[in-house]
Amino acid sequence: MTEKTETATLSSDATEVRAQKLKLLREQIGEVYPAHFHRTMTNAELAEKYKDLESDVETQDVVTVAGRVYSSRNSGMFMDIHDASGKIQIFSHKDVTPEEARNMLGMIDIGDIIGVTGTVRRTKRGELSINAREITMLTKSLLPMPEKWHGVSDVEIRYRKRHLDIMTNEESKLRFQQRSKIMSGIRRFMENDGFMEVETPMLHSVYGGATAEPFKTHHNTLKLDMYLRIAPELYLKRTLVSGLTDKVFEINRNFRNEGVSTRHNPEFTMMECYWAYADYEDIMDLVERLFESLALSIHGTTEFPFGDKTISFKGPFKRVPMPDAVKEVTGIDFLAMKTDEEARAAAKAAGFEVEKDWTWGECLAFIFEEKVEATLIQPSHVTHFPKDISPFAKEVPGEPRLVERFETYCNAWELGNAFSELNDPEEQRRRMVEQLEQAHARGEKEKQLDDEFLDAIDQGMPPAGGLGIGVDRLIMLLTNAPSIRDVILFPARRSKAD
Image (cartoon, rainbow, N blue to C red):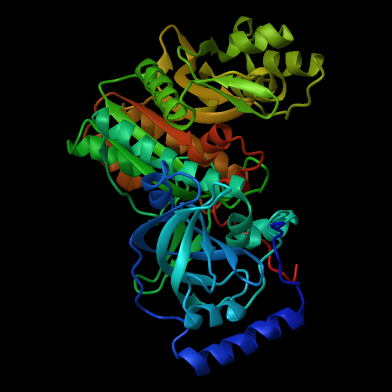
């Protein structure tokens, strides 16, 4: 007997047949979508309990399972049903299955969810099965499933109808199970390291903590325009001021009204933390320990594949100052330059197009992005960023143009951003005012000064190291996902009309 999967034809006729069966079921059995059904174990638990059961042996153990029908053979005599943990074969035959239950078989389609009670056996072929004594319709599916073995081939449909993608694609299902494990792993690691988790507002009256275009909304009761959070930084720092804890973190959703790409999504997840009496070097060690623990949790080793590469999360990671990295790749020595004019001239001489008002630091950062980022395949901490683009970090001793900031790169992607946090209230205000003036000059008229944050810093914030990690990109790496939309369960899509 060959075991071929019978799949429903994707057509209006197939949908009509299902609707007719639903009508008949309502007439014959009454409730087709019962509120109560209790299984005794999952399919995985069943497989584990009876893993040593020999072939061609039937037990007298009666179990109850439930799941979606993925395949039906020999007019329903053999069915495979899947729950979230795995599959089990159902065997219905006149020698073991009562007539009432057998009569249900013709009403069952691929995609229906059923409950089955019966005895456990292992077939001559070694397939763990249940000899059905009772079959219960739990959910009649009114739409045919995609063909199981090919799944949803259209990428846009995969993202728009993620339920079908996961239903038919074991890789997608595993990836989101791994995402859940990674999120739990981050939380567990941070808590074990002494960090306290808090929740900060997602609606801000003044947006800040990062440079990005915000999503705007309106609070009807307060009659106040508000913004969806672009970063939790300014609130998390206030917890350090308060003395609530010396080590604080938040796993948070952020919203930036900007472009979409394989590495960018306007709604994304970050883990942000602040550690009083620590600095950016302490944070580098923290990142390495966190990444290593997550790789071990998912892969059992610190080395894992991504595309055609092998990535190693075994610390310590490479550490290189940004000016040194640029000099190594391009030969341009920014530290030897004294003025903005020199920096712009050197960049132009090397073939880079830079704006006429760019500063020394902006030129350095631009060339780094253009030429160096792509070379950072294995995990690397790029340190000593220009102060021009880092308003919340402390200066590098002896080099006031640079600050104690690093970004962690892997596969040419930025994964994390960290500072030795600025806690001088006067310098903080000066830099934020300067940043605000620059934003207004660029036409960002809604950008405001966060006076409540500055008032809190005036109260005194301890020296601290701060970190933000792009969780979605980290999950992309750990699960070998080519696009950020592959690791976001329900990414935003254009309307069908578009």
